[in-house]
Amino acid sequence: MRIRYTFEKLTREQRAALEAILLEEMEIQAWYTVTVSPLLGGETLIWIQ
Image (cartoon, helix red, strand yellow):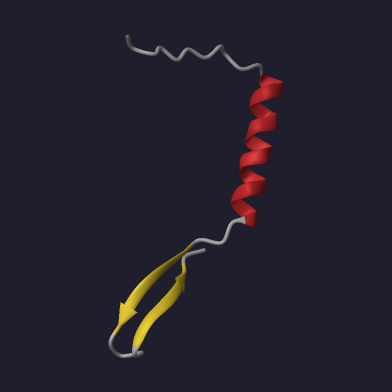
């Protein structure tokens, strides 16, 4: 049996609240990647933001 996910339409207030939360979370998060660089002698962190 397959699970069916259905979502009801969001009101403007709900959408605005969720957008505000998402934008706040994006500002807080620190995006980075780990790479290996032979020139620097090993692993390094590169900040993406």
